[in-house]
Length: 157
Image 1 (cartoon, helix red, strand yellow):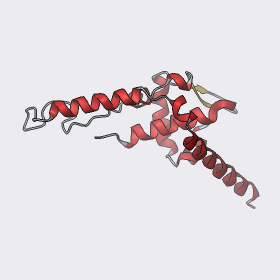
Image 2 (image 1 turned 45 degrees about the horizontal axis):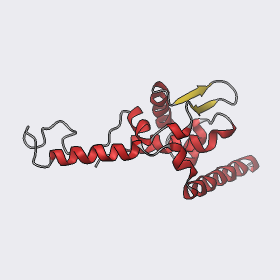
Image 3 (image 1 turned 30 degrees about the vertical axis):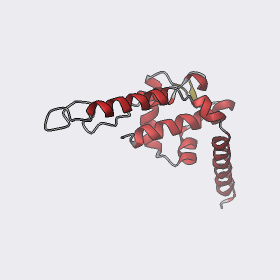
Image 4 (image 1 turned 45 degrees about the vertical axis):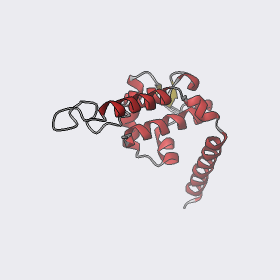
């Protein structure tokens, strides 16, 4: 099965946004630091997420991004789809040309598996993930680490 970095990073960044934007817009630099994802890569992903209507941008001082909808309504599959990613278990990318231009014996099995995976991810929302205790603990650790980095930077000469 293929789920590339683009899909994984988009879901990670959106979950970070869902968990941290309760007090206002979140800048991509903060997500970048917490999740260790390149800022330029996040900018590309968020342009797609904004076009898909999943995030809103806020300009100016204190600006950043907010979820455009409640986290309980945004499925993981929608996030992956928004960045033009697919969850595909086939070797041929679903084109039915797996075996020298023809469909292989197991093509339909892998197509069905891909559909099941997409269905599973469509049934999991950012809100459900954000409510999980283990994810809350990880997010808390990441925020503490970021706050610690800020205090180190503030005390530097």
